[in-house]
Image (cartoon, rainbow, N blue to C red; front, side, top):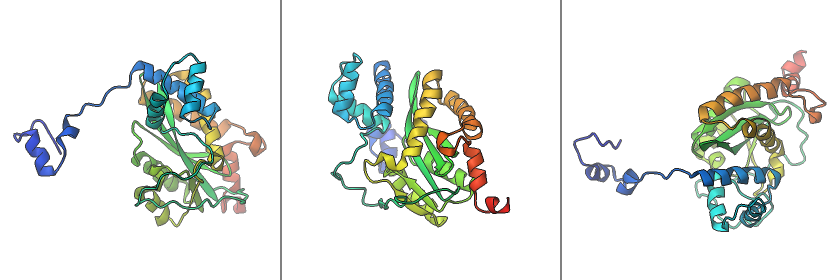
Length: 276
């Protein structure tokens, strides 16, 4: 809405639209090469030590010869969307407009496709930047139903992935996520409600509640992202298209009796299974 080519001065345009001029003149700072390397190391450490907070992360970086302060580590972890995963007291209030839903999968044995889905977001390092990946996974089969990349932690790339998964595979009975703001947002929750999907959320710090997708992140990073060192989101997207296709069609899982996610999904899908 604001344009420098308009005959009205920027200050007048901001006044008309009730916007702060500081947001118009602000030029975002690029992440330095040093910080990108630190973020890559933080990502690797987080995969191995998900319980590490800012102090533990700083200590692990010191062990790798990176003398960095705890405050700087905290800033980078926040930018990455990374936090320590452990049971801790609820010290902050949730957004007043965001409802937190109970965890519905405890004690359930999920053996059929579309009985429960889960979703999560992870940080993806690149040689000259970073982005974020969201994936929608079927709980019983581990099949990745949809995924999206974004250079910001907004809600839209999560809702796009959710809408694609539902349009291609129908609606699950239960949808489980963590308590991230993208998943508690009205835009995301309303899609679930409109399809009569029961909403489930992990307990705060309960990473084991979404353990299958946490394992997915470890696999995709060690088997693709870290090995390839992609230069751009376009390259990441092309690489992940091939990786997820192979993962779904050809990757055999010991926990699935050495079957592939595709095989388990289609063989346990209600209606399809009954017709076989």
